[in-house]
Length: 213
Ligand code: SF4
Ligand code: SF4
Image (cartoon, helix red, strand yellow):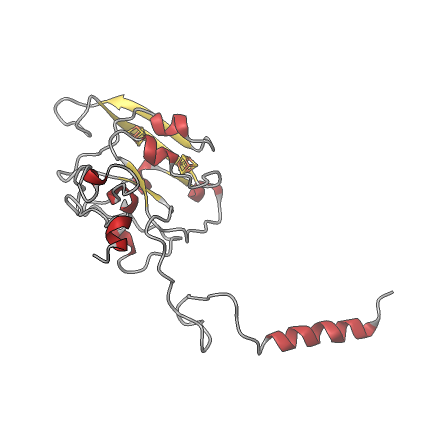
């Protein structure tokens, strides 16, 4: 039998913790306590979050339905079905386009291998990781949800926590050059333009930062 005083001791610990410094960060508007930030902390430039399917500057979809992303995905969470483009009203510049595209976020481990495998830069990851769904249907993102809108920005789904400006960083890692590779390519843009953004400037490389540029 437990000692009744154990309950008192337990509640005493809880009570003491109420007045200690918080080690967690609570950034939901309106609920932060004094001394706690009400804002999200900046994320690392190449954080991997919720995916988007990108479009070219003219609005055409970049996905050509090749299924390479699905083939390389270690979690087997991408489902793609390609279809032939209508020659009179093509969806993508190629012969085929992604007719069905789904990502199951109950499985995705955000490894970014799909992004690296994609030959057309169609699939990239934003930095958004705050999307907690309450049912399986919401967890499986469809093409309509993943495809950027007419302004080139990710669609904001009801259960996602986007803050102003966060939807601008949808393909940051692809803008990085490779300072650990051939220095001649640092700062060179080597990817296609995006709807809403055009051709983005390259990220500054590590050697540039080291030189204080
Ligand atoms: S990030 Fe990794 S686990 Fe997630 S869909 Fe892409 S390849 Fe699969
Ligand atoms: S997202 Fe890229 S890799 Fe995946 S099917 Fe489309 S074009 Fe192919």
